[in-house]
Amino acid sequence: MKIPAKIMDEVKIYLEREKMPKGRHDDIMEKVRALYKNVTYDPEEPIGVVTAQSLSEPATQMSIDYNEKVILKHNGRIRFH
Image (cartoon, rainbow, N blue to C red; front, top):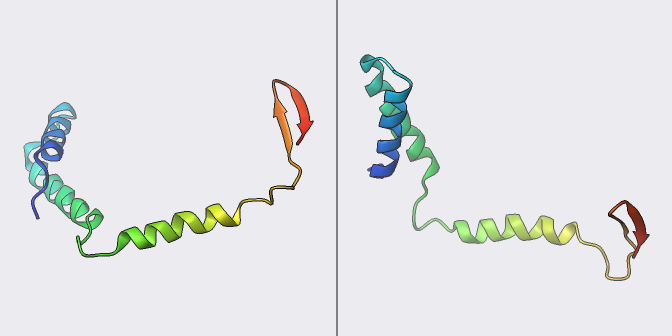
């Protein structure tokens, strides 16, 4: 799996800025490759459906009825709506 050039460039800049020993560069780059591989997904994986379910379920369960009264505090004033 090829890592985008922008990520590789940022890692190289980090290594130079932090003055990492040259002997550790390969180890760190390999770790970056492994981490990148872990966060990618298969294009055929249906993550859109799972994401929609994960986001919409809590959002609908945490809603209240239209007629439910709520307490609001705005600019130091408390009001009931």
